[in-house]
Amino acid sequence: VVGIFSRRDEKDRPYRDVVRSTWMQQPMVCPLQMLGDNRSDCKIFVTFVVGRPSSAASSKGTATMRRHDAGVEESNDETDLTALDVSENMNCGKTRAWFDYGARNYREATHIAKMDMDAFVQVPNLLNIMERFPDTGCPHIFGGRSWNCPDTRFCPP
Image (cartoon, rainbow, N blue to C red; front, side, top):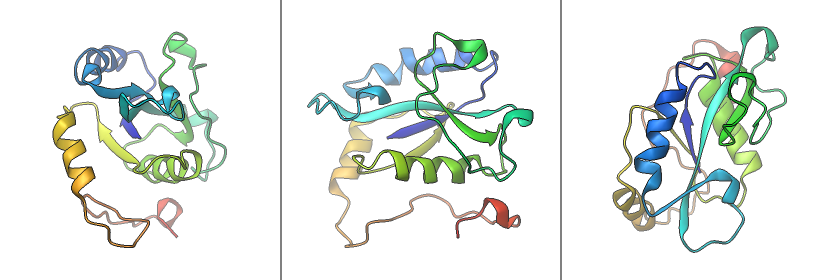
C-alpha cells in the first residue's frame, strides 16, 4: 500500500490528476479500494493521504482515522483519498499517523509506504526490490531516512 501525501485543498488536485494519469497507469498499480479483491494484476495499491483542516483534527494527531474518505468537502468526486484525523501538516505527525493507520487497517498488505507527489515510481524496479528483499525474520522493518523527533506527541512509542 502506497500513501501519496497530498493536501486536501484544490491547489493539489491538478497534481493528483497528473499522478493518476502517469505512473498510476502502469501495470500492477491499482487504487487502494481494490485491496482484498485478490486480483493477480494488482501488486501496488495507491491512495492519496490528506489531513484534516486544523480546526477539525484531533489535537493528539492519532485519534479516529477514516478509510477511503470520499467525503472530502472540496473534492467529492475523488474516491481515492484517505483522510487522517491529523491537522494538515508537513512535520507534525502526519507521516507517523499514516504508518500507524496503514499497519492497523491494511493487514493484508505486505508493505506500507509513503511518498510525495513529486516522485515518479518505476513500478518494475520497486517490485523487483520488494520481491528480492531478504527475509530477516523481523516483521517490522523501516526503510528510508531516520527522523529526529523533538516533539514526543508525534513520535513512535
